[in-house]
Amino acid sequence: MKFKFNPAFYLVLCAIIISPTQASDELNVYSARKEAYIKPLLDQFAHIHNVQVNLVTSKADALIQRLIGEGKNTPADVLITVDAGRLHRARQADLLQPIDTSRFANAAPSQFQDPEGYWFGLSLRARTLVYHPQRVTAQQLSDYESLADAQWKKRICVRSSNNIYNQSLVASMIAHHGGEATQQWAKQLVNNFARNPQGGDRDQIKAVAAGLCDIALVNSYYLGGMLNGSDAEQAAARQVKLFWPNQNGRGAHMNISGIAVTKYANNLPLAIQLIEFLYTDAAQAWYGDANMEYPVRKGITTNPILLSWGDYKADNLPLKQLGTHNAEAVKIMDRAGWK
Image 1 (cartoon, helix red, strand yellow):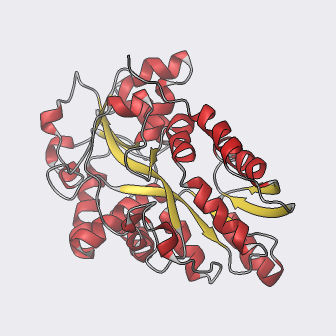
Image 2: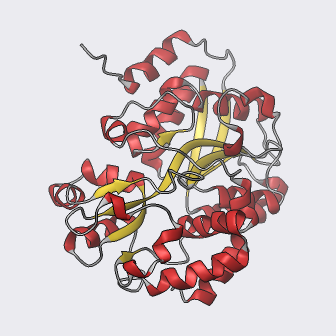
């Protein structure tokens, strides 16, 4: 009989076996994650440590601008975002403070942390391909680079260039191949678009199912969410298959949801305790069940849908480079006509 992991049970168990702090305290969290995907974990943390956790949610760029405006008077202790590029942007704006990375050396692979301790990845967000198996075979697919091939003329769906996930993918291409080669790739890729970019990743999946295109670039958790969604979403999601790109090379492009301690945090010890809590087995497993994201720690994945997609090779590019090359990526996409 196969043991079924129940993250909710283990979160409750953590609350029982971890001794709470004696004194009541308070932690203020700014989060670009939607409330449903972070508040249950924050509530557990608050219960364990007998503290009050105040949550403010908004778009990442809006939170960064808020931190800039608040300056030394910010109440925020922690910033949580869903992209390494935004974390890099916050660091460049001098909004974060470094934390000793040795505290988390065994929690997350080094490429998913800022090398100087300014931010830490919590969950993995893979940029994958979905395809319609009646019009495309897995043998025809290989890597991101080959999406520029002539065989895909008018067959690819993707969201707009102002989307940070696409910007980070292009930034990774710059890191691997340089700006000139990436510019040529982007131009050829745009020529292969089946339609002008529009909608979110779920819309790209639905477009493949509806025959508007044959393959699409999407984050894997959107497909997982649709497989657990409404009847209509499930019907569309079951018509497509997921493909892991670049498995014979550098590996699939990865991004993260991540956390950082703000420069003027009022409760540094509690902020660090929150990071430690979010690296526990139960909290890591929760990401897979709540949002179909891969835990950043290895060996934690338990969700049946994630397991059904099999093992994959991840790009080991340090995610700091996604932020470093973001501005150039945006310019390349604009020059290529990626709307």
